[in-house]
Length: 404
Ligand code: MLT
Image (cartoon, rainbow, N blue to C red; front, side, top):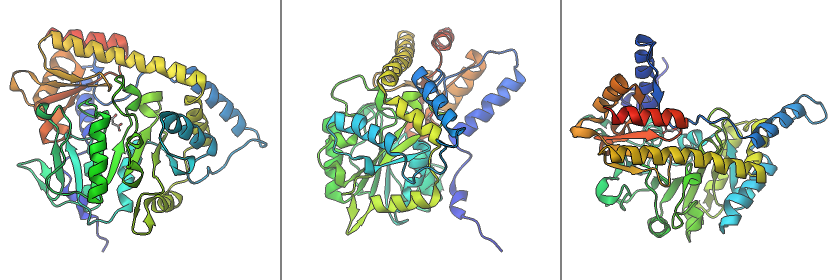
């Protein structure tokens, strides 16, 4: 008789955004006349930039021509894309990262879920609270936690680092020593950023504790302040303790195309074993590479035209962010985020729970957001709105919320 992976049974409910999608679809089916504005999942709405579309067209033409056709992609990604990333994302920022330390993938969600596979199931995991649920759920699936405790809404054996208004939504070094630390900055869901000085403290701590930091920098394109690092490799000593995850979803609108990458420096080792070689082994075995046409589209993100066009796209979303921030603040809401990130984190009014506010907003304003408690117990009493809507919908949503 086959046996299942019983760790899956520890997970309560469904994936956060699947739950929200079901609730919203049910409401939409019952109320077909309502215009629902979706500022829940962080999905982009602006079309792909012209430089990217041109690259896609060219690559599609190549795929229809025997002389230029491409089959399987190289295990770790095409050189043209890895070189562009190494030069522009890293060397230009003074980070010592080479192309052969970059692994191209189909996105940061998959990478953030898969990366834990190269670590022992004995590792102690530390996550921020609130947190992007993928980091927690994938470690639960792998058996790195005990049962889910319904009273505290946490998994036994996992270290939760509270990110609250009291610490400006920045985690503090935990009392218990972790082996693997997940950090995401600019942060999803709170929109908070970390200064270079604070990130350096984490790097120093990880090196001293023998821990690995899995640094999710999916939102780095939204940084507007100068003392905020775009990469963990801006910190000294990070090559021996940090893996970085990057995405093309938020900076270039690839949520529907799928492309991302993970950086694993060669110095990141335990004894003689490098994590680079383990991740390369895993990648080569389980993955056949992001499509050629999508990697060509990714290359266009780094072209002069692409960079210029995407700067405009990021500015468009950040204009939405400031509209939401200012609008809700003027209406008396306590808001944060939205300056270095496309997420606005607000306190629910009148002590409502996050899910009560979700229902209230959906039913009375027909606006969808994400309940903070879905990201962890310290998200209770908070709510996340994304800046990824169209400007017109963003304005309408804020006006409807203000009118409540
Ligand atoms: C979010 O809304 O938190 C993100 O869009 C989810 C993701 O990037 O997978």
